[in-house]
Length: 388
Image 1 (cartoon, rainbow, N blue to C red):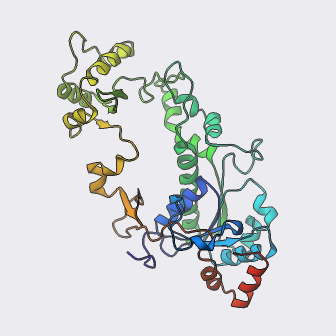
Image 2: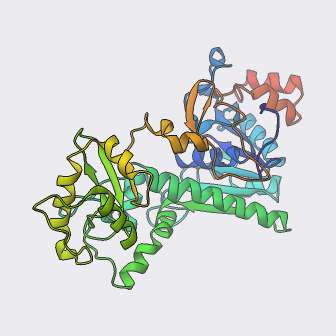
Image 3: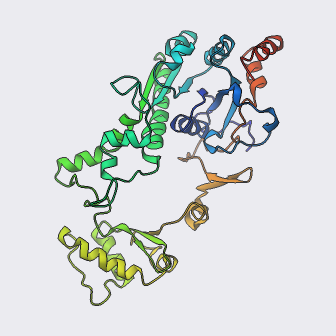
């Protein structure tokens, strides 16, 4: 599919993204993957014309066109508001109040386009005592209780990279919020502001844990519960070659399948009652001893194509080569780069990677012309440093 062919359920949706890092670009990537026309407003100081024509290495920026703008200049503000006038949504990830000071805050943009959906991505949210301060994924997880629950029993909490906060509770929630607000606008509602805070998103993601606590099925101590590595039948095990297996045989029938296929237990270990948590430490030791008798791939060959709920723990290089992921095209190659394919999948409006990540400012002239700027005005803006 060529770059100019619309693809995906969001084809025709116009999005302006004020360049940032992490969850904001991820939300913009999701919208672009789903077919939206996303324009990334990069800093004029980041523009290097010598790099044009070569994909930028940051895959989070895929699917976009880029314009280089000095947001602190009057001309830069003029350009952004001109782009906003024809857009459906805007994404920004600055601290609260920054875009207002730049003259491209919600009031400014909604005045230019009352149907605009203005998406704001922060860690703490637009209000509250912590809103003015810096933070990172680990801090937001800490406040929501999520970080407390991740780690081994008796050990300190372990940060789960930044997938849970930045991308799950942040960028994905912002993308959902934007699509929801766009749906409302298509139904006749006015534009509005979407306040996506990572702390809010992570709290929502943890709803099931709160429910399990109320049901008496979850202890506050980490590493002792059914889904946090406490159960020996939901954990990882080292194999003979030093690589690992993931075991998720939660339900009795899946555990029975695992026992049958693996030959558990080795003598003199016992097949203790797995429903009694008092037996979990001994069971874990027995399973660990068994799994160390074969390599990871030997166990995968024995257990993988079954209901034993066992999978090899693959590294980043191995994952795209797994037969299941390869068969589904979960990873694709674009411009010589293997990367995750757009998700989810649509039967009637299939998605595609239409554009590689752009270099900052690579499409400045094209986008200014499309926004109605005459050549002499473009020249003046460039001479003033408002665009690059």
